[in-house]
Length: 448
Image 1 (cartoon, one colour):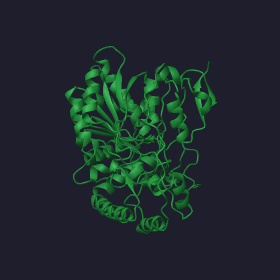
Image 2 (image 1 turned 90 degrees about the horizontal axis):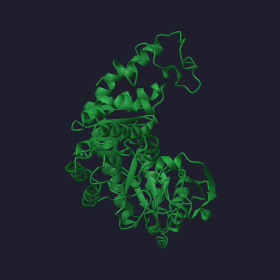
Image 3 (image 1 turned 60 degrees about the vertical axis):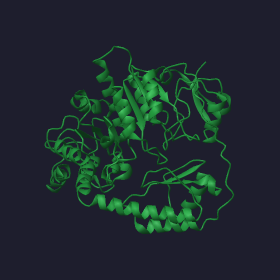
Image 4 (image 1 turned 30 degrees about the vertical axis):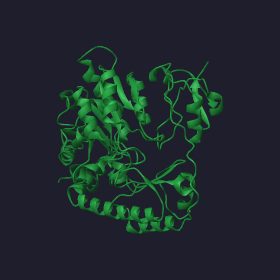
């Protein structure tokens, strides 16, 4: 497996060049990485029109992921999500002239919401069919999707998030079959699941029938923050592949990070060697760790194999309480909410770090279970489209004073970048109670 981007940059940096080009640091070390931080000089290729080393590297990635095409992003999966929706818009332009309608799981990342607003897409929400509501989780049975597609025959695409932030994975294979039976493409935000391709058998969305999907390489693979992939299936409409570079260029910086590109490039070599075995060994260890902790009456959620999601309320803790206790031991989780604590180990996690985690949890005293106080989400009334709401004058209010007002902004941080309501919807007592449960104190509403 070649590493053309990495090789070019290292050769260039080693040639003691006179850097009369950007960036302004000229290769002089401040952080230490500057010698390898370049721009689109001669021979460095162009991310949004690749003909040389970037094209070769992306072709390597496409072979590894079994895609018709894989494109690099230095703007994370957010850039890829926007590109996927733009490609959906282009494909729909060849058909009926009506504004495209996307059927989307309600736990969509806020990048999806901003993309729908920028592209002026209509969204029909697929609401969670879970036994118990949680902000990040949105179970969508195939029968439910089939019914919704029957009700909305003009849908341009189905958009799902799998795995979600809590480690729940959707039945992509069955949901893809339903979508394709209705002649609708399936788009998957697979930001947390780049590694799924390297399981045996593969559980990657492309291998299960998705037409487009994005992976945040930096979340689960040894890639610098911001590195991501846009994957295009062999069975997807040809308009996707022919317009993918243009779609990515519309939402990415004209100065993409060559540090991130090198990281993605080197990751190809890493994945091509013994990564599947390292992954299998890590999963085996994590399975044993979960089993040991389960025997101590700690409970886990989700079915994603390398994510540790502790259902904290069953052990008498809130997620933030448990996070604080672990951080006092030098262990830093990924995400915490009132009901869950999420930890994201990978094959790069040192064994001693996992031993430390297991020991720290075992030594915590179990408490009486906490009651589950989160109400189920009741679908709110939508007064405005996403675009109309996000582009309207707004004001900040305390969450208590917002009932009856129309949501204007995205009052949610990342993680998890998922909100109970979306801009354009009327805030009810139900949605306000959910915001309050997740400790949101102020919210942006339309000005009167």
